[in-house]
Length: 118
Image 1 (cartoon, rainbow, N blue to C red):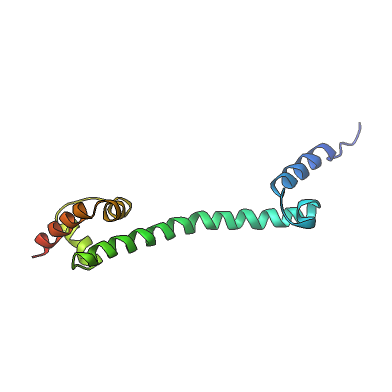
Image 2 (tube, one colour):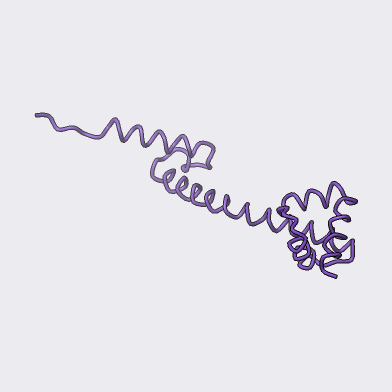
């Protein structure tokens, strides 16, 4: 009975890692050991980045809604509370888009929120 060595699987694994490391600087794209470390770090950063992206977009939407509210003499928090009272269920992404692309429509939403708060 012959002993089976892992050459085929090792080569496959090495090729997969080196393919992911293509374009990295110096040894990080050529040597398996350094490439593996660089790829692991890059993939971890990419995972974190995908979570941060959601956070950053929410911050952007809130800033845009707040700017639209301030132009109509209202604070962001009171506006959101007024919309909730008026039973208007629009998410922040849509509200931010309305604030940027349709100021008149956003002004109507602000007036609706003000009416519900008064």
